[in-house]
Image (cartoon, rainbow, N blue to C red; front, side, top):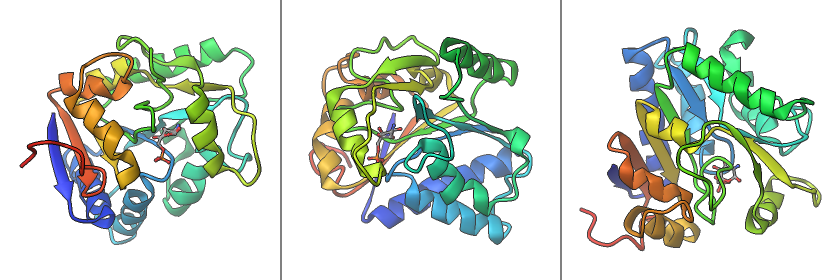
Length: 244
Ligand SMILES: N[C@@H]1[C@@H](O)[C@H](O)[C@@H](COP(=O)(O)O)O[C@@H]1O
């Protein structure tokens, strides 16, 4: 795991976008996982800019969505799909076949997990998996207690996830389950990237990166991942000890 700390959120976002641009230049057909939420918004803005300036070419890569609230699709404001369509896909000239996301409205949600697992396995595995971090250390919707060796699965949302998750919606919304890529995907990805910003994430970042490694703090798995890149702004890094 390599930790990089940037003076501002904008610097962190640009560094994350640069990692993606380099990945695409080195392997145009990369399979890349993108998260939704507040954390990636600056990075996505830079990537849209890079695509317009021909500094990043998304035409041959495949984008995989990290997670989704069960029962929602792109028509639901606040869903992960809605977020990624609005902030990212709608600004890029993407072949829809190269965008692979959970159908969180499917009748057979277990089958949906299998579909995504099979797609990833049959396409040679993930080249890059970018994640944000929840206030309880969740990655994607891998909540505390999730075994490290799971691929895509359904999850019961923790109360804090339901509470914090309201920020994505215009009105109070019932959230109960998530569908998400697993931590096994993260440990097997050729590059795992965590982005986190703001002082509110400082405690969970310190617990995750310098605390005990345990499924109780899902993001602590990053300590076991040699190919993990951790991108933080000063606020998110403010409770870490001895990082040069
Ligand atoms: N399901 C999402 C995660 O995929 C996201 O990475 C995380 C952090 O969100 P934010 O970046 O808005 O802080 O929590 C949400 O619950």
